[in-house]
Length: 441
Image 1 (cartoon, one colour):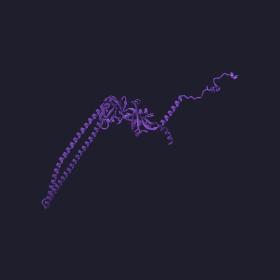
Image 2 (cartoon, helix red, strand yellow):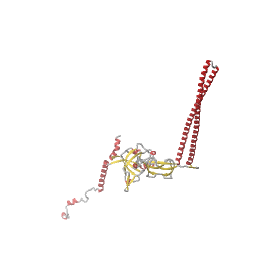
Image 3 (tube, one colour):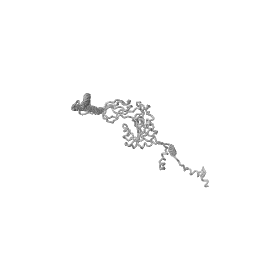
Image 4 (cartoon, helix red, strand yellow):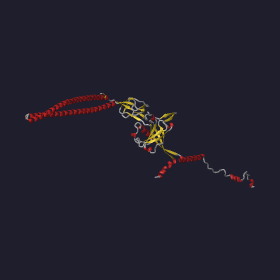
């Protein structure tokens, strides 16, 4: 009866039991799409880093500062002393030859009585006139003394001629007296003359001999006088030569003083050699000090007027900490201050020389020292202006920079920064280098 009263179900009890617990659903672990993307990207980045570390390389660079200079160097024209530039005989870009006048400098000084140089010139002119008068007086005195000595010598020569005649006559009388005495002695022996007469002849002969002796003595005295006068004439000539030498020395000193005084009034500055004037720093009317640079010029090469010296090269200056591995042949990337590399790119060059010894700050080129030091202080980190600098010469690949469709030629004195490309290694070599260095100790 009870079974008859139960309602009839559309589904079997087993089906209802099987579906009674399916409302909860199955367990599922949901993962967002972004996690997969991040994982993939991390793997890609890691693989890229590993590949870069394995195959990539890094170049060691030395950052230095420098300046452009002519290949043949440059010459500075300095003022020799303090003064005022009164005339400039050349212009920038003009070619000059050795000895050509470049500048005219006035060094006149004013005093209470006027221009000092002019006063000194007057005094020197008076001294020169006095010196010339003294030269004429000494020459006149020499001629007078010389003529007197020559006249005396002529008189002695005439006197010597007369004396020779007297000696000849006296000698002849002596010979006659000797002959007469011989005859008287023969007659005395024969008894024709008395002994008194013979003695008288002997006395006469003695007087004649004394006369001859006296004349010969006078002859010797006359010869001595002539020799003395000839010696006086030679001494007079020597004295004149000595006086002339002294006067010429005084004249040379006077001429030197006059030249120095003239140089104080003004001086001409000439070119030491042929070349091209590149820069003129002072204009007529400006005062200059001794040693100040008036102009800069590029020297000529051989007989050509600086044609071969138009090219420029770069001189880099670096302290010793950056110069250790710099060698000729290394590539150099250059950034000129006048041409920003962000717009005009990097210029290239090659190291051609490295100085063997450093330059002290006072040994740098005088006209470029301040530029070199200030540029190095701005470019090189930790640079001290008292540090010694090594010079690195760089040959430029090009003498111009392409700017706005035109070639802009480089000029001397342009400042720049440069990277000297040194050691190139794989990245993993740089990573393991400290470890290898520790193991090798």
